[in-house]
Length: 246
Image 1 (cartoon, rainbow, N blue to C red):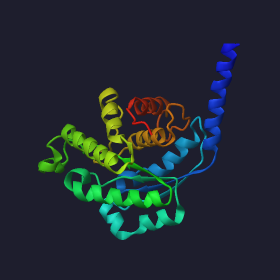
Image 2 (cartoon, rainbow, N blue to C red):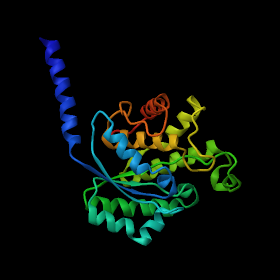
Image 3 (tube, helix red, strand yellow):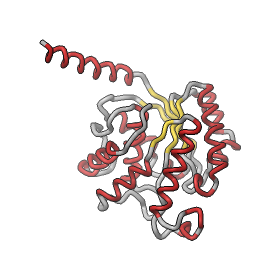
């Protein structure tokens, strides 16, 4: 009898999760080419639809190349969409070096966006990015730390600190890239520049899914353009990343 009760309770939890996710979820992506390349919003939408939650996601994106968060704030397009659309989630992705090369501006702009998101009932997610490839000329600048590992450590720290200070959720995509590059080096997550390959975009979508829906990503049947085994490996990588409790 006890075993039947436990199974019944577990089933109720699953059904409740699906019921909550059944309603459409809207997400506003604010970033630049790191989000735009390979169309991360579309990959995220399809990943969520193919997940165990089978959730429908409406995505909106403002992703001009090279944009800093301060650029987005000054232009006003993203804020206007936030106020008009009232999305459930606001995802902020800074310029690839922004937390290192312009930390004060990055922190201030993230805080301004977070305040606007709070006003319309949206949850803010900081999309923590990855280091540039080793050959990148940015490593000649002191703010880079001089190596991919040092740059990644700086990005991890910068995003985590700002997320904590402003009370935002953190999607540690860069950490997932570190794990993926270490454990599955044959899977190329970058396209030869700082931009993600299709595999890198897929991994970013898996991490964002896990953070936003507080659910393991390893059950999606959507594999994008990747071989099934590659996609499943990347789902496992996303689930290895430590996520702060919501």
